[in-house]
Image 1 (cartoon, rainbow, N blue to C red):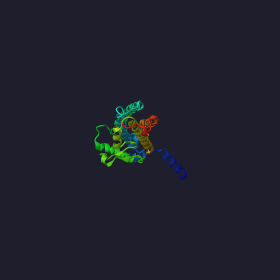
Image 2: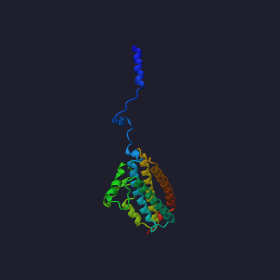
Image 3: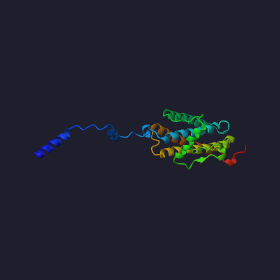
Image 4: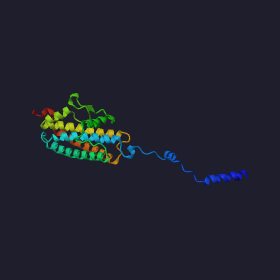
Amino acid sequence: MAGALAGALAVACASAPRAALPAETASTVAAAPAPDTVRNGYTAADVRFMQQMIHHHAQAVRMAALVPSRSSSEAVRTLAERIDASQQTEIEAMRHWLEERHELAPGPSMARTVHDSIVGSMHDMHDMSSMHHAPADSGMDAMLMPGMLTPAQMQALADARGTAFDRLFLEGMIRHHEGALTMVAALLATPGAGQEPQLFGFASDVDSGQRAEIRRMQAILATLPPPDSVPPR
């Protein structure tokens, strides 16, 4: 009799509906909400990369603007036109990416304090070996990004003419492009960064495009006469 009663109780317990969990208990069982970086599909490092690359590209545009009135090489002038067009287009693409996500998009009228905050956050990037401070007397206390020319180097470029200018421009722009490659590599080395499809595609295009232009500039540089043979101005 006792065995039959125990069996009946077991069947009854198995078939009885389970009581609903209290709301607070159910919330602890449910999966925790994804963090912002996952829910939005991008990370803070992605935002910094775009903001800083805008400033990096902007210097390349300023360098290219010096070419028409100083270069003696048709190849350099053609190259500068291509660099200006591509960098301007990419700056607009980066600004659009940031604005779509309601992130700060650097522009020419940005307040200096905001500019320095963005550039200064390069401290959070991985490879700092190729970065350096602007000279203390330059009026720039922000850290320059990889490959960027210092104010003194920009002035030397602006003061040069002819073949001397072409050599300085090519050497400076090669270093500048190599700096962009460093920034892409640092982004992709940051855990969780560079995964958003649009940003990853952009960073990949920057990498391949800068490498192609470096090869093109190296080829032009090889055609210039050695520095010792350049006649004085």
